[in-house]
Length: 180
Image 1 (cartoon, rainbow, N blue to C red):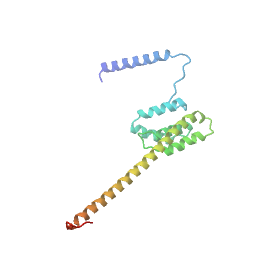
Image 2 (cartoon, helix red, strand yellow):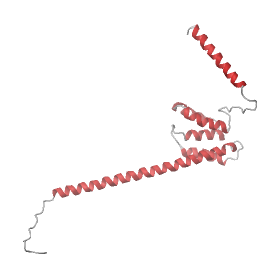
Image 3 (cartoon, one colour):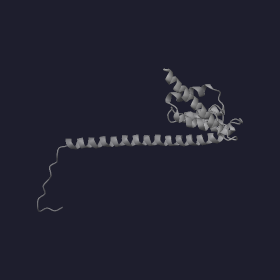
Image 4 (cartoon, rainbow, N blue to C red):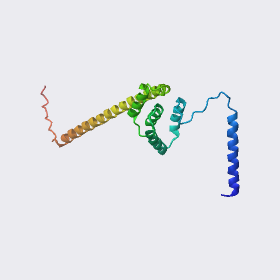
């Protein structure tokens, strides 16, 4: 790189740092500390859920590997349940529900702040499971209806074939004077 490009980059970096520091001094003294992603707080869990939408497929896969490897705390279980229910991963709502259920039934003091969130997410997953079951039933009914319609069409075609092979009958002519 040229020295001019390096000077511009350093200048921009310095301006960024100055703006960041100026922004920090404008915060009120009693402002809440920003939650870090690794802090086991409710705010961090909600931030994690929002962050899942911005992750790529590969990042979601890495995240799953990480969550499996770390100790299973209530915070980790909530995050794993959120990941298992995310639309862009291979969903496993039943496993997610099991994790949420363990948080809900836990008497661990660390689980208490996460229990309302776990209840909400579990309710959402239960509704999704119910809707998926309904869709499966409707899909099966549609297949059955299509099969029956196909069978009926085959029978109609067979009857039409039989009708074509029959020799036409002669109509009997009635004498003019006869009555029925």
